Length: 413
Image (cartoon, rainbow, N blue to C red; front, side, top):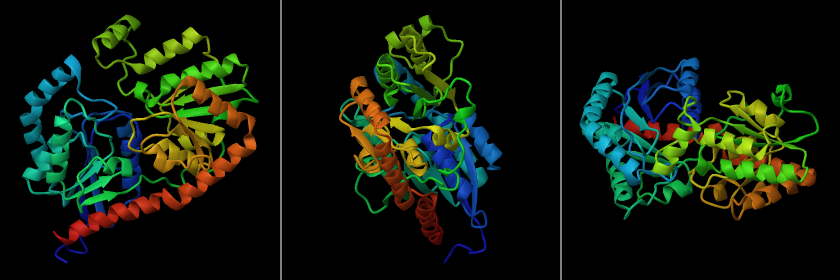
């Protein structure tokens, strides 16, 4: 073995942002569980945000390097006039960002570079130009866009610049070229941290009364995540007199609390990114269900919140992996999800949860009501979800697979 066995493997991670979500949390759990006698991690974030504080609290070294990202996935892709503007800015900033990243890579001189998103095109090219070994983590479903040109460019760059590729699901892997360096590694969940025997923190929330079914949705507040359908389903059930509270855990990726409804509507009309959280709260107010839909924002006690929920709803059709699904499974909670994409890999229909044929509010409401009225079935689904999480989605399985890739690459150093 060319690599010195007593030397720690230096890994330089790049992450695309600072907001809390599945991708950064998965990266956090990975680094937290790395054997620090074997690995020396350091993280470069493209912006500061709430999730950076979690890395800091865990004692993980990091720095901030703002760069342009090449968004071309199903959650957000460059389209229309706003997309043209972003694409032009990406081109203008490409070379300054490229050389800045080369300086960072040279400064740290890592053994391995781990890119945590397909959007990190410039970082991938910078690493490749310096002949570093690159592990490219693909966590998104790439969008076809116009004529599939940009999608093909991204596929080509990822394939050319990477030494190993990690797809977080078969859904994510299916969009990439078939190659021996492509690995499917599911995200993992710690059954010690997500312990189904812990107490709930929801009984401490003043807005939640007794004898209510608690229905949760966890994740960033994006329209594409199905948050509006969730609220519409809540309206239907409240209108039927169902005693339930609907809990939203998460925040908008881009917070503009000062932004007015007029400005938000103008951005929406122009096709520019706007604050979905603001729109969602407006909808809740218009429906008159402020006491029934509860916004908890970003929380660090998600396991304790899950402990108090009766079920979790996951309506995103754009995710390559639904982390809330496996977290709900670890806590023994049934899941209602769309019969689409990676959800089909994470949920066994009528075994660990319910897969919906559509995200129509009436369909969602019927599924929620069905589990409320049949708690024994909900309990069986949750127990099966727990067994599935134990057998397939543990942090130990995830860690073994990722570290195996690192160690194989280290052997060639």
